[in-house]
Every structure is written in structure tokens, then in C-alpha cells.
Length: 347
Ligand code: DAH
Image 1 (cartoon, helix red, strand yellow):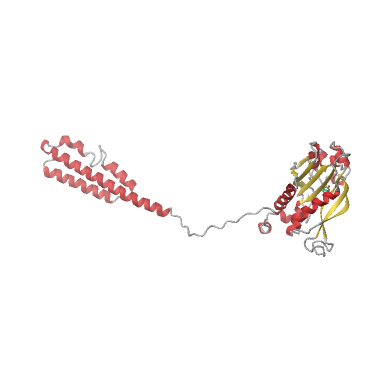
Image 2 (tube, protein in one colour; image 1 turned 90 degrees about the horizontal axis):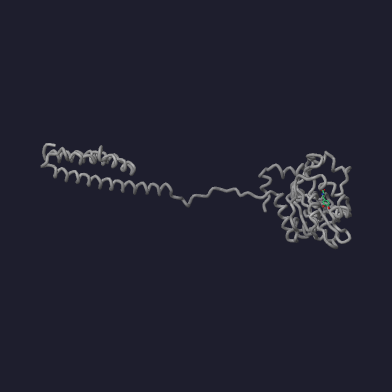
């Protein structure tokens, strides 16, 4: 650098070059990178200038040093200004892009609903819980003993036929009735008993009103002085809750190996209120469940003293109640998962 003029000119040139470089920057990240590059002590156009001090003529050194310092201060200031400017813009752009439009209409959410069988099961559980019943769930795989033998169903009973029962082995099967739970509860040896047992049961049966898998709920009460009158009182509560006030029951003699006497229970037709319609086939009554006074043989088999205790039991098809209540004419509609059908039933 020969003279004063050279120093000034050089400084102006560098400044011009830096100005041009800065004019091309578009965001804060590039400002940061440009600053790093330009001010680098070894390679940067400004940063490296101080290292030239030694080569400058003595009389020009002070002038050079001051000019470079000024240039550096100027550049630092420009970087800070640019950085500030871009950061502000970037922040505004971010706020804009993340802005939530509270006036947008919401996405439609299709609310699910409980399955009709679940609805009726829950209803039954509510009714009986309010009467102080305990819930026993039992298992779907049962021993032949609990499903049949202990319930006084003899070896030659038609229900034991392979055609009706899914046997897993000579000893194990898929329970065909929730009645199996009665024995487990009585075997615990704790009296009195007031229990319901809802769950799935399985039979090799398949048509418009039968499915190989369906749901039942068993009821069992064992106490001193229990009679068929208690049973009907309980069942009236059940049908009034499920089908509406004023619905009553009628008991007809029937036969089940585990009850004596046994009854078939009809409910007064809730569609025509007894006048006779298609649902009740003109009779005013609809058959809904089986029940009876627990057979002494069954109680004694579980070690219960029949001189002191008696019991009543009933078993109801939950799917059948759901079909009646919601007007399904084919049990398959309950299992085909067609939301157009199932979605019509709401709590
Ligand atoms: N377990 C019988 C069935 O599946 C229903 C039944 C009838 C249950 C009479 C009972 C009862 O507890 O007392 O057909």
C-alpha cells in the first residue's frame, strides 16, 4: 500500500464489495454465514485486514489501523441491523403461518355408540345391581361337569349331543349356557347367594333366530324361604325396566333338569299391550326366558342343606331381548357389524 490514497481507496472498495454481498442476503441464517465468512481472521475480507499491519509503511499504520477499525465497526453494525430486520420478518411469517383460524367450521366427528347387546346387558346389570345382586362372569370354556352333570343333565340328554355342543375334548367344551356359573358360585360355600352371570354361550345352531354364539344372563338366588313368588317379583322388575312400565310376566309350566318346578316366562306384549299383534302372533304374550325353583339335587350336589335353603334361578337370552326391544327380525343383524343397522340404536 503505497500512500494514504491507496488505503482509503482499498477500504472503500472492500466496503463496496461487502455492501454488494449484503444486498444479496435474504434471511438471518445467510447473514450469520456471511458475517462468519467476511470477518474470519484468516480468510475474511475484513477480518484478515489487521494481519496486513506489518506490511504497511510505518507512517501509514495508524491511519490504516483506524480505517480498518472503522470498517469493522461499520460491518458489525450492518450485520446486526440486517439480522434484526430478517429476524423480525421471519417471526412475523411464522406467526402468520401458525395462525389459527377460529372461524373455520370443525371437522365432523361421528360419535360411536354401544352395541345393542351391550346396551341391554348394561341395562340388566344396572337393574340387578340395584337389587343387590353380585356379578359372576365365569369362563367360556367349561368342564362338561359344570355345564351338564352338576346341573342334573344326564349323560343321555339330547343337549349333550355333539350336534348341539362344541366339545373341545371329552372333558372340556364351550359352555352352552350361563347356568354353568351357578355351580361355581354355589361351590364357594358362601350363603345366601344373589348373583347374576352375563356372558357368551355357544351352540351348534344357525338360522334367523339362532346364532352359534349368543349372550345369556343367568340369575340365581339361594336363601332361606325363597319361593317362585320372589322369582316373579324379580322378573317383573326386569321386564318393566327393559320394555317399559306396565309390562308384566306370565309363568307357564315347563321342564328344565336343574329346576323343579320349572317355568317358561312370557312377557306381556309391549307393542300391542295384550290386544294381539304380529310381534306376539296374536296371543298378547311373548316368550322370553326359562326359570324355576332350583332342583334340590343341584343344591345338594353343591353341599347346600335343602332343609334350610331353597333357590330360584332364571336364564335369559340377551340377544333375544335386544331383538324384541329394538325390533330386529334376524339375529344375524346383530353380528354383521353394519353400522347403518346398529347405529340406529342409541342409548
Ligand atoms: N339354561 C337354560 C337354557 O339355556 C335357561 C334356563 C332355564 C336357565 C331355567 C335357568 C333356569 O337358570 O332356571 O335354555
